[in-house]
Length: 480
Ligand code: SF4
Image (cartoon, rainbow, N blue to C red; front, side, top):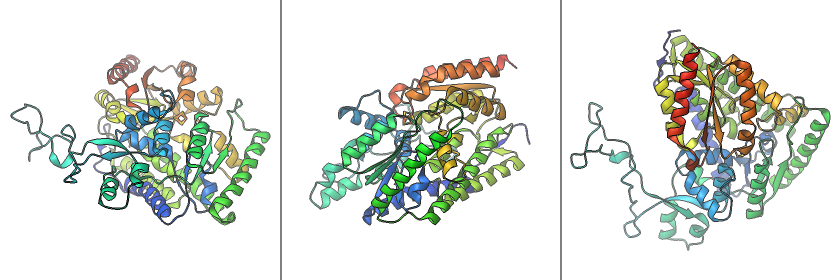
């Protein structure tokens, strides 16, 4: 392979297929709601195979919250949740989701007389001339905005107020003014599926949604595991809950449990998990045929559609694309890979460009991500399924956590580690200082931490982050 991989242009067939999978999940849920079928909201590591056995439509608030945050509306929704009484210390995903559950949406401002959207002059990309140069406004001396990319002012609205309006032009106009992104148009829930293998904040978050909408909550309790292994008593405890969940799902769907459909969902979920883990493993190549940041984008599929055959096929296609990149000496990384790091934690979705910029400037590729392979649940049969769902990043003991990180750092040949101390995710960030001390000591590689938040942009400071990346680069270079 060429020393410096060439930048691969445009989205590959695998990426396009993955985008379609997530779009379809949201669209099918909207259509199901219109037909009067029940739609569920589920935590990301709830065993999705159970609902799939009943052909139930399920959407994922964590994925939705990440999307809302990446679309720069995280602060608006977090503040809305705080205004109705949820504490600022609660996870940003939970605040966004609770505000959404209470009816809050992002609306585009319009002139009530003309119905025209009111364009925010600060929005949009710089206008470029036919040679690709930025056009400067003679009056202000600043770059002109490309009018085609400018968007309306946004405001917080409540769907309950809009739906209470009498049918007619005004109601129609306000519904059409909802920001047209799939996360802002997700249907309200008829039941919720919660598994606390991620954290206990999840339990209270879903209990609140269930209470707010007066709908059933199906809870799978998977406690924190102090041991590396999952013993038989733990498996039995979770298996019994699967049985209870199946009974509840029978009631909600009005159908009997279909073993054939369940087996098919498990088969698809395993196929997806294996293809996803294969995709993650391409980061082991040096230089890598992909940017580690790509994995963050593809996580939407592994969260929202693990049990669908289309997801497995799309990841298999992506693996083929990456294989081709290796043959062609190309990469999705838009710069030369000089250093490789593990990124610990969930990214700051509202600040992805700010996160990427100093990495690009220093030639650092993220070639290991703890968060991504954690969704690769591979199992055979119900007992193994119970065991697999026990292994979530925040529910395993520190020994297991250290071993995971050391394995991935070695396999993916990293020169250093960048740790996101995520204010939203207390369980993850809480044990990270000790975890980081142990695995960086064992591996003898430098590590830098920065403060941020996965969804609330108020908790991220770009200057601090840039300084930490710079420091990490210096420490990694000093070891050459
Ligand atoms: S695991 Fe962390 S990020 Fe996920 S819901 Fe719990 S607190 Fe929030």
